[in-house]
Amino acid sequence: MSENSRATQTTLETLWRLWLPLADHLATQQQTLGRPFVQGILGGQGTGKTTLARMVQLILSQWEPKLRTVCISIDDLYKTYADRQRLQAEDPRLIWRGPPGTHDVDLGVAVLDALRRGESPVAIPRFDKSAWGGAGDRTTPEIVTGADIVLFEGWFVGVQPVPDAAFDNPPEPIITRDDIAFARDMNRKLQDYLPLWERLDSLMVLYPVDWRLSLPWRQEAERERVALGMGGMTDAQIADFVNYFWKALHPELFIEPLLESGADLVVRIKADRALDAIYSHLR
Image 1 (cartoon, helix red, strand yellow):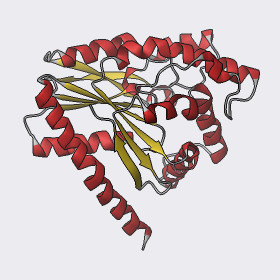
Image 2 (tube, helix red, strand yellow):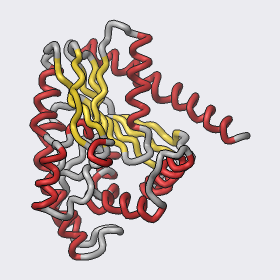
Image 3 (tube, rainbow, N blue to C red):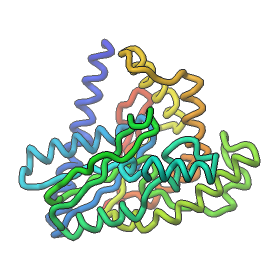
């Protein structure tokens, strides 16, 4: 089977096993709840969380045109460029945007509360990753006339703080004393995000059969960007980038506990991006 044929087969399988059933479930949940339904989507790099949100939004627009679906990424809640520059000056370890502490949690709570209350219009924050030479900054908000279903996705959406003892013997690449101190600080900052997670009506997790797959997946995506003349990082730079986020919130410590309890739906993903298993704890 050719590479294109395998990709098509994987897409069709994902459509039938995940995207369509999820869209149907969300429509049913919203009707049962009688107010806007907020679905959290947790997934690391390469797990397809953004694609899933966009596809479910598209499916619902065709099935239920009256249902208004809004997609929000935790990236849309980044603090402004100026605020992040000040933050980095205070804590030079924050070399990348993304870890806990780089988002405006109060803004996220206000937006989700407005959507849950059925307010209209609502200004949805948006983030331009290309601004300031790739450092990124907020851009013009998207104005929506309310929402019936909200898909809120991100690489640590719904993640809970863990006991401090988890860092007594942490997994790699949390190795040095500085690594452990950084991981502990990020864990403490998760407390600030709990009010945001409380606005979720449901949480689903997209998780590879091996969490290390995020690295080759990101390297593959970057090579494709370079091949298209878009520029990008080298494999070594990507490795440093991915390891940075593993040190901040390691998947073994923060995501795997949600697979057995804490998530309503878990989707395991194979190395070739095909679906492995789907299991639910749906209420």
